[in-house]
Length: 356
Image 1 (cartoon, rainbow, N blue to C red):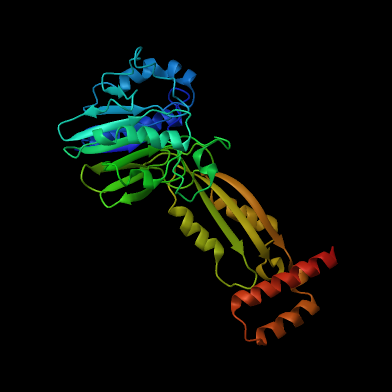
Image 2 (cartoon, rainbow, N blue to C red):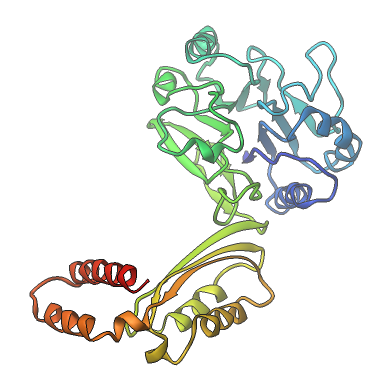
């Protein structure tokens, strides 16, 4: 059985980038002949967005040739109605409203932990309550939306959630449970996998489209055959790519040519955040700050770019007799190049302050 796992699409408007990312995921599901698409929380950015988009979702969530299973996240925990008043989102869709009522297939059992505003102790207690029901006669999967406390990442990587913790858990909670996969959501930044034990995988796929500048790099989903390890699948959706280049007037390497080569490898869907820093010697290079900036902008013509230019022309310092003498003496010292560069920067900063 082939499963595609995503989360944190945060739909807001019809036919925008997020909507198109969802369409792309559905198309991948058809092309790869998946059996199940799991959406592990925050399909919607707000409950009101779900009501606005529900009619349109009914058409794209029907007749895909695979099941779509959704578990509510913290942003859309009230979007699907309740267990008593379930809302219709399409013929392919099943929403898991109750941790204690998994979806059963011939060889797998899919549990869902709908988002609740509970602390770590309560989360663990609920898992313990279903321990005896997670039997080994089938492969068990848990759909979960919350924060893995073992993971080393910034809280900014979850999205705009503030300081509140959302259904926090630890990998150790799953060591004595018969889950083979924990398909998670809430962590936006990147695809990541942990193994609580040998036969169990805990997976965050990351958001399938960059929602903020914090979500950098090609977006991905998790696709895997039951019984096999998770596998990252790259998407052709908009994302942020950060490029940082630093000019060094003592390095003869052609940074511009290197930048051209790097840009040619970046997907056209990327929104580039470019930071250009360091020092230049306009007298030696025969290029002013403006000349250099215009040359760089020419490389990125036709691209979506946010520029952050921090370069400084220090030709007056570099051609000062005192600095030339210092640099000559420095070159005679038996120091590694990194240490020499540190000392040059200290002197450059000091002389710039004096000249200003």
